[in-house]
Image (cartoon, rainbow, N blue to C red):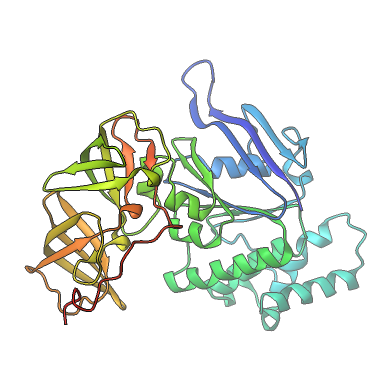
Length: 388
């Protein structure tokens, strides 16, 4: 296992003294031994460039890449003892699965006998459940089978680091879910420090120990999946992580003895001061509501805001539905249960617990209050309050 550190890493393509393009800017990331890091962000944010610098395929313009405290900036990729899995599988088409799996081991000066390599191939194939495919060539394999072979070729070498560059991008939605679970299980089983690039926030949330959210080459937040979801560092992170997208509305904030008063178009409510840790120095804020945090007012008794919403679209998703409608503050999206009696054109009353409300400084877009999970909404609705 390897302790990975990026210290002030910057990558500029072109002449840094002229009009060079800054792909990654002053990046600080630390990944403890055995952790699974996901580099998350939109296209062009610098996540693949960062991965390539870790792997030695790109040289940092500034800063240091360290493995277990040793600077590896000048160490060639082939000498870093890393294994990389690519989006396009990169299998040798003229070789069988067995030959693809063993190719790296047979080329390395590792003092392994042919018998030991053969045993390692069989062990890896059994782990990935592809032992029956060892004599097949890539053209005879499905997309999921090819990805398993690509993973096996990385695992078999028992490297210091696993690097994954959007390995599931070419797979269909169902197979992506299956494979990301298998990658997570495999990484936990072998315990090798890993870095994984994706723009899919659902993928990142399900497999990461830590997520590094990047935008325009800069680190926006480094934290656990819970932290980036519940306590996003800024508005960009809050909007990028979470599906459906967060509802955002302009509001003004005033301070009372025990609570902050939030005034929005058509609605106002209090947030107890005990729920706000940040120093509030502004009265212009953005208020954020996650769609899945809404309740129908007839099902929950809360002290939060209420929204009378004119339904435009109902999108059933299993036992819940994503509801889009018009409310006094603006367009509103909610994810609700008990949707079978809801249809477009009807009115729906929604509410949200104060601890689930997000607040952002309207000017800096920095987080003032996140979504608290330790404290739950008070007061389930009584039998008299719930509609029959």
